[in-house]
Length: 236
Image (cartoon, rainbow, N blue to C red; front, side, top):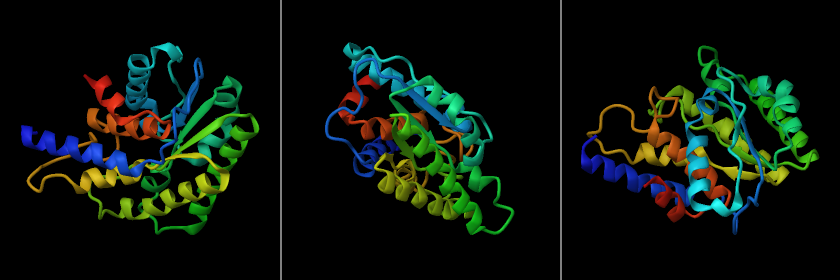
């Protein structure tokens, strides 16, 4: 990308994160607390989790936070996370779990018409994980799924909105922290310069590149109460 494009994208990211996350008053993580992340291949790749670790290590060294435990598995849907939630999350006894799932629930089924029963099952499965975590005293950060291609008019992105709405509803009903990553990504993609070719924040329209990882990290960190200026300082 040319310098002007980089600057435009950077500004768009900062604005999108600032207006699109549900931010807590003050830091929502305490000294020594463990975070476990569960999800699909986006989580398994681990880029945004490494970026979060970087921010915590540079900006909050006094908290002595352990590295985030990554339990993402490629290709999985919400229905695949439920059977392993006890083993991969509950038994690790974290203080916080981030749940980022939903891309494959839509993407892998695009060749068939939208099925409301699939969406209903998705919401039920995410709710089961939230209930299990909260029963174990684990605080939950729910992430809305990001995007399926950087074409906001694609069939995948149109369907994905319903799954994002389901996550938002669960967050309200269960009083979870919410990182609205989908809205952040939509704002950034919508703000791309008209002459910019190719993907800006993903490698293939779904999986993250470097800027996309930072975008996800920022959305979750802001939700945990980390100010944007500390995140920007940690990037340098």
